[in-house]
Amino acid sequence: MIESKTSRVYWIDALKGVGIIFVVLGHTLGIGAYIDKYIFSFHMPLFFFASGFLIKNKDIALSFKEFSFKYLRLLIIPYVFFGVVTYFPWLFFTRHFGENALIELNPIKPILGILYGSGTDGWLYHNVMLWFFPCLFMVHVMFRSIARAVGMHNIKIMVIPIAVIGYVLSIAGIPRMPWGVDIAITGLAFYMIGNLSRGIPERLNELKAFSVYMVLLAALCVQVTAIHYNGRIDMNSLLYGNPILFYSGALSGILFWAIICIRSQELRILSKIGRNSIIIFPLHRLSFSIITWFGIYVFNMDVAFKQTLIASLIYTSVSIFFLLLAAPLMRRYMPYFIGMKASNKST
Image (cartoon, rainbow, N blue to C red):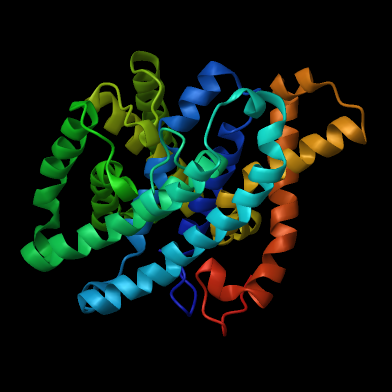
């Protein structure tokens, strides 16, 4: 495990950097069906996995009140903040242009959706990606409750039952649950797997180069096979397809990029992107609207250009670049609203 003196796991930062790049790229219009299926096959499970890897025993030992308040600060305060901040640009501007202008939606519903915490049926239409924040909060709470009930050493026996329950909920046809509880149960399975994987990075670091290449090749083959035979995955919509293909595709994709992040030494930009994922994740769609405005009214861009792969790459890189520039300012002047303590000035 590559850790700093403050026990920061830099390869996990890099892995989250990979994940957030795929999140941003996956929300562009020109990536094509196969790249879309590749991204959605594992990018959200990756974040649940990373969160489970990072959870500490001392966190589990906290009282329910202390634990809940910690993750309310880390996740729910940013969730509400970004929910409100991105609502008003949508209300006054973006909902009146393009495809948004064709949607008949009560403008009050998205702001009420912040309370409901669901990214479906128009509840968070102004910023659908926000579903992940309350969902991850519920995953944290569920994991602590289970760990306290059965013991951390027995978490491994809970993975399959939790995965089964999550899949059954996805096909049960029941109304969507508030705060993404129905998604959270599936997310919890990946969270548990991440927690159980804490000893694996050391073993991967000990492998010979040839063995690493073989594992990478095997992981890629499994993921490509799963993508080919399974449908498009969308955790927000509870679309998992075949459960075996879903889990094998997601875990092989996570393994592939985790190995690259663990074995590579110079991943500073990926680590920086990963450390700022809490800013990039909720603001990249708003940045897309700004990029489009400049493209059309300043550079005379054809709207059809947005549906090309080169446009997707431009939107992704420009969005991340400018949000990284904004991140230090947000950390300095509004740390509390992005889940930080006022004394934390790291970038």
